[in-house]
Image (cartoon, rainbow, N blue to C red; front, side, top):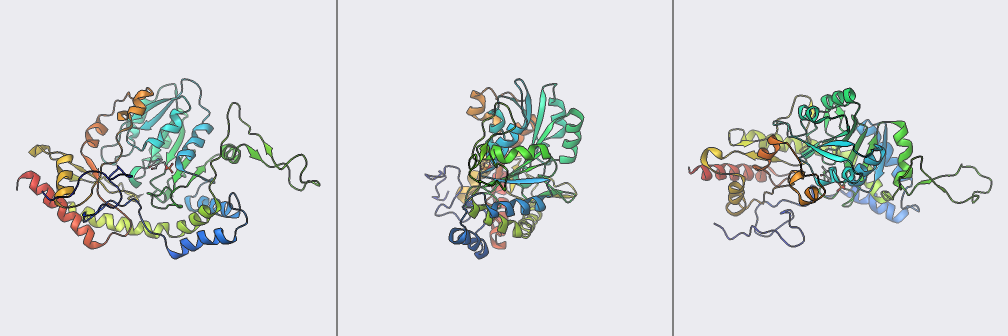
Length: 414
Ligand SMILES: Cc1ncc(COP(=O)(O)O)c(C=O)c1O
């Protein structure tokens, strides 16, 4: 055993972030900023009189709507609040149920749980690792009002099938696209299928607007008309061109919904300017990630104990993360044994990301611990994430492959 520490460090107990002594760390961010991106931020700091909700926000919203191919797009301060806005606009009633994948980050479900609906956890597809449409169908009841499809790890969920099911049962569809901007199915981007698409520009995502940020795409004109007021404390303008612009006041406060308090979920101008800049190169940086994933997949294809999600034809998986499943049951070993080897012997700081939601105390305490998800239960206990960022060198990729091979061979006792 080497003397590397397997403990997490103060300030980031997740295992992410650089720790001295590791040959491959799991970085807290996916990529660095280009000079053009830095310039876009500095330009707003230096020159823009309006620092929030101005021309840069409007430009970004037009850019993002065109990029996704959505009917409407709005900048927001994070994906959690994009999901919150979607949950508000679903106008749930007492006793309603929402189907959500058991495997996702907590922020997918919390904004829906907050409305008082019953969260019903669906299983994952054993090959794709996103919500299983067959299990959605099994879990629909007369009280089901919505389904949340999460394009987790960058893999699009099976949206054509989910949209068919939703149409049959009159369900609202929310896409959690936090980990998948630019992912697509037969050329149609995620966030353009459902009623809402919720995007994150958090610091660990493929594009980040200085650590926090997000966007929501909206299908119907009716929902889109309510969004600006919900996003900004109910503010709506009095008619333009008033002779006395100060009469009756600067702006009105109202929304066309009953019993809903609006909030402030706005994104600042510097972040919007940066977001416009970032989406210019999103596809090319994603091509880089896809190429590095292809290399890694090919190099480990001859290790039968390791499995990667199957990417269906026509699907653009953007590889937000590179997750593997390890099956060492034939020789009595599990994922934790492999991570012991990777972290201490190979100095590769692999991590294990979120639990299935129903295992978290918060969801259990709030009465959302019930589940029937056998595929996920078994799969999750043996999956892990390799260190991953955009633009890994061939040398690093080769080292990861060698480490995985050595780890599996050691556990097999060869
Ligand atoms: C799947 C998923 N949904 C939602 C979120 C929430 O995003 P944000 O941090 O922008 O609120 C995240 C962020 O990690 C996520 O991974």
